Image (cartoon, rainbow, N blue to C red; front, side):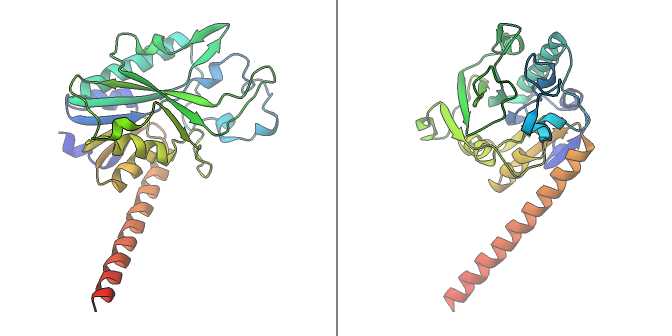
Length: 259
């Protein structure tokens, strides 16, 4: 039953856990998988050209995942994950799948090798303010791509369709995870929908869970790394305590004003 997973970070393999969840039970999926960056050619991450970024979290890599598998295997894995996500969402649900285009051996990888036959409705550009550049032959990459993959009856909340399809959000700087989602980006997505239950099958540091909780929505997070699971749970607890403290202060202030 889906209730057994509510408001928890499930520590395990995303594909395996999703296969255990019942169909048509999730309102919204917001996620960003590992990008297989260390399989990339010419990016300097695996041959010591990191320079001033040599100690960066992204260079050091993920906990419990090396982000370096053969591309065909990676694409097949991600496609299978997306198929499971699509099975899980309701008829008015949607997937917001964040990934990155790149050129590999002179060929553009625009993720059609992953998305394939899934019904993309829109591409949103997330324009980051800053980034890491490992190669002197490239201009600094400053954007990522969010694929909106909905079921037929998905609609945005009233007035949310006034947002453009290019979003400017600064990367999270105070997060130990190698590739954390910006809180504001997740807030934009979730608050633009009526979704009550949000799933992030690559939950990382738990940003989707924290934002969902702050918007009074239920969440399910799936994460492979026990380290990130623990940090996510600690982060969720901190946010719960902060919310309770704020609620207490608001009630107290209201009572003092009445008196």
